[in-house]
Image (tube, rainbow, N blue to C red; front, side, top):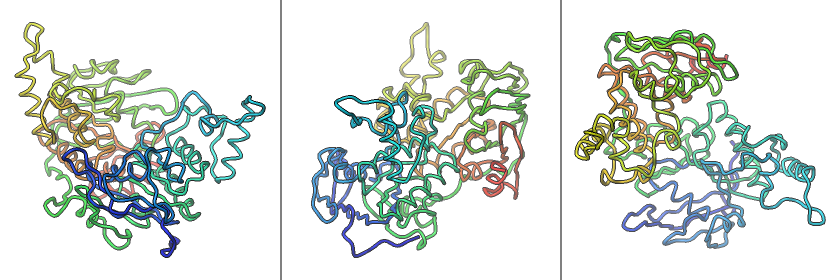
Length: 503
């Protein structure tokens, strides 16, 4: 990696900044500096202060104390627009674009070129191509934005930011929805921008990814910067320990050293036309084991999860749950009645109602069981919610608290608790730790191991190779819609999984 100029004025500097929300101190006095050609990764558990710092740097939050300097000059941001004028751009996790417009129209939104007060499609495309040539990045300007993959949508956002002469890019969880290949492509792009003198700030939970690209890793805990060092100076365990603190030792989920039990799930001859699709997929899951399914994005693993959740159209084949044969599930209710509890990949749009209380969210799928003559027994609902929230170590103020007020990791635990409350024979977890911090990820992995120990069949579908290798007793690799390998024992490694998935 090329080194930055330590003698130059920082592109941006936060000096002693603090931020409070009522009695809660989200950010303690913090000094944070990014210079030209630096890529700084910010890591920490949810609630550690990293997102608050990013909001302060990009004008979404006004600090209660301290100051912000850009290129050595003190500035005050009252809005993201103020930060953008100073060359500080945020690329959010939830990308903001207009899916029905073209790439060119999205790039030039709110500043469409015109001649004599009128604009034309050809004029917009010419201006967009000129912009992309200038910043050195390319996405087909005529493509419909909604047809692009997430990685290309992120590139469009980066082009948009650079087109406004941004000198600092702040990316919030940029690889949360990307495959390993897409994440690699994005980080290589960020490396090119860094070499060109752009300052890059990345908030991420993927320590293995950022170690390869960051020039510095800053660790936040309880609103405080507790460690700042180049990745070469410390092993990953040291950064994780700094995140969690001395009272929280990082240990992997313990795999049970027992033989798998009776068959609880058997998929036979699943087929889905198209790309991605499924081509004659069959598998077996036994009680007491965690079966992993891994594939790069578009290989078909996500279709397998959706099929078991009853949300996939056009699926053909059959499925046995214990010894009861079913046609493929035509609805989530059909899957649930068969004994399948499905944890979807996107908890916000498919799994939870964020304005609901924790109590209602945990018990939502079993309200019929808790009802007497059509009336819900609130005491029973509360007992169920309390029991399962305790089992999954959900951190909350009270059971009436809205789920949307919880951290991402605790939202995911509520989602898991609601599925387990149905007393399933099989739990299907699709991207079970997407968008959660390292501590919550560890707790969720252990919870899945505990479910397997209780003789529930657990099937995990994940595009995170580190996660899937860590948690699986047995791993199926899917490529081009077909299962191409089964890995167990010493062969169950990240290297083998990636090699087989990308062959």
